[in-house]
Image (cartoon, rainbow, N blue to C red; front, side, top):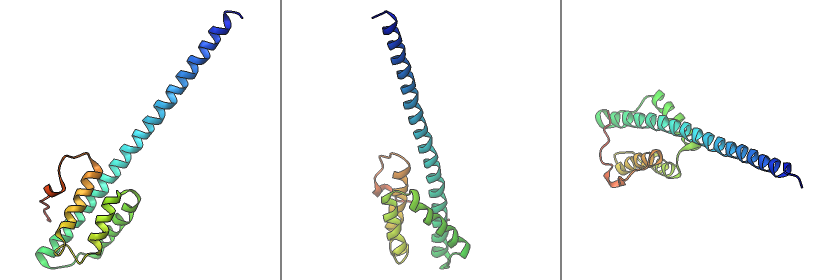
Length: 137
């Protein structure tokens, strides 16, 4: 056995380690990028949904009116796409809210929807019972 064999073996092992390390780093980097993009998408959609809910609630509370067909269309688009990325908890609350007879009879469902969105977007120490204020403007 010559001295070259251990040197070559060490070089091959070292190269394999570098390549393996790069592959692992690349995997986790891409995973983090996907998670960031997913967070941004959820945040944007959740903000749009909250805005539309606030408009509808404001119309009902102040004018007893109904929202426009355009608002319904926007709401449908947001709710339909939520099935792709909304948390299970959020979807359960939204289904209950949308199947109910309205926000006047079930005000806690809106709090549950907002709570589920908050939990889906961030780690929080708040409790669901602390979600007490939602201004419909």
